[in-house]
Length: 298
Image 1 (cartoon, rainbow, N blue to C red):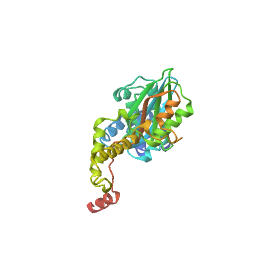
Image 2: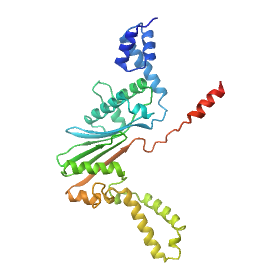
Image 3: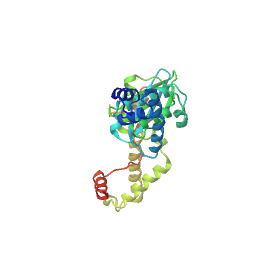
C-alpha cells in the first residue's frame, strides 16, 4: 500500500518516531493516523523491552524546585548525543516537574507518578525508549519537601552532567547558598562532615598510606611515634579532601566551607550531588575492530 508522505510527516510530528517506523505503522494501519499511533506504541513497548538489558551510562542531571518541594534527578541514556536532544531534555523536565508534585520516596514509587499527560513516569520513559531508539531510565532521585525554617539551594552545571541540591537549616542569603552549591559541584565532597566518613573507608585509606610509607625513604629510621603522627596527618589530609566542611572554600579560601556556613548562622541538613554515570561500568566499543570483524565475516 502506498503511504502519503504528508501522513508520514504528520505522524512523525505527533509521535517523534523515525520516518521508517511511521511508514510501517501507516502501512499496517491502512493509512489511519490514529491507528498508526496505537501501532507505534504497541510495537514501541516491544522494542523498549529488547533494550532493557543495555547499559545506559550517559544522560543528564537536573535539580528543580517549586514553592513546596525540591528534587534532583539523574536520567540516563546510552549516548551523549541523545542526552543533548531537545525531546530528551523535555522528558527530563517533565519527570522532574511531576516528581515535585508527588510524595515519592522510592524509585518504584517515582516510576508510578503521573505526568501532565496522564501517563506514569515509567510509561513516559518506555515510550521515549521506543521513540528515541535508546534505553532511557530514571536512575535515581531525591525529593525534599520545603519547610519555613529551611533554605533550599540548587546548582545545575552548564554541561547538564552535574547537579547539586542543598538544604540548610535556617535562612541563608541566596547568593551565599548558591556559592556553597557551586563549591559542592566543583569539589565533589562525598560527605558533609568528617564524622560521617565510614570507619571501613578510614581503615582502607590508612592501609594504603601505611603501605606507601614502607617505600618512603624520608621515613626510614624515624621513631615509631613520629611515623605514627605523620601517617595520621596524611590520613587527616585525605579525609579532609572528601569532607565538605573541611575543604577550602573555592569562593573565599580564607574560609573552610564549614566555617563559612557557621558564619551565616545556619547548618547544612542535606547535601546531594549527582554526576552522570557515577558508579556505572561503561562499555567501551572499539568501532574499528567491530567493522573489521563484520568485513571478515562477509
